[in-house]
Length: 511
Image 1 (cartoon, helix red, strand yellow):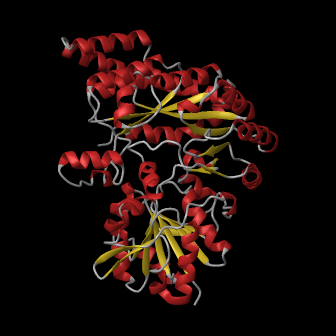
Image 2: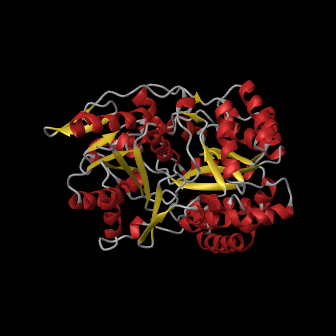
């Protein structure tokens, strides 16, 4: 019997690196694999699910696998129930960060769960189906299942240390299909662009696995405990350049290379210097990186900019050192952030900074520290605001659950881009855009708390000014900075940012 995997993704973004790795692992091992993307599944009804059922009947997969995050759990569980009713003999498997963290919850809907990194496990699962069916799958490392009413968790394979051993994948995966507007069709450039960030003109790549930090709110906090390691594993520069060369050759209209590493700069100076030299000589495309403030130095940013650095992302999270130290256990403080931001500003690199709002463990003084930090940050920059979410398995979730007297599942439904609409959050957001003299007046008035009515009027006027003038101007300034000040290029790349930018802008108004 030919072993055939069907992966189903309900992420809005079709550029799913983790899923591509599993898909191409199977193909490289001569197994059959198909990806079905369902980015609009929350709008689906039982009536138009029939199209998905027809697709499954046509392919008769050995197993159907879902890869999901916590925010996708409710939708995936609903679709899994429907598939199981229609195809009771097909084995359902779940994987990804949420099944890794909460396998017991997921086994209410899946026949098995794959925990942790499953690059090797997915091949072993395929081989097990081939030789002994689902009974053999139950003996595979990383697999978790129900047995006699109890949860059985098999041992974990070691973390993949040789990332170069993983097979390459493609920007638009082979054997991939899109379920959209009630129909299923192959993924091609035109429909891929509709559901990929920045019109699909950005190629996403990961050159490392692991994070040097283990912040209490992050999934890396759980993974560090699961594997007992924070080791950063890196791909060789040869393999990185090889992958990017193919991507640029296959898709010459790519505008950016997006390095999605948790901390791109967690490497030696020699490694970074060689990477920059070879990237500039062979690839030559503008690129985006993420880092942690303590890893920023003038020498690193100078080398990266010379190689084509267009954007850099840093996490401030909170301007309060107390919150960073006691709540987030994050060894990056206000002074580290401001030092890094000044280096980035002096190097004329476009930056976007992450800030977490709605933290019940922050005092008003802590929140004001974040506002003051943003006011000290050299402009222009773009700020991404997130609402603190207590994800299952993280240290911060355990703290909150203990204080609430038991488990809670708010994270399954919460929109982390939609923060509370209160005065302090509004002032924090305005700190990115308004002139400093105006912001200082607003903060001073807020601190006095003696003229609430006047402050409300002032904030209304300030928000109107921001929406109509200061915010668009700031975005244009940052985008222009990302293309080295070239006004023509700014206008050329602007459409790539428009869809993503507007989407994030309107997310803040959702409840």
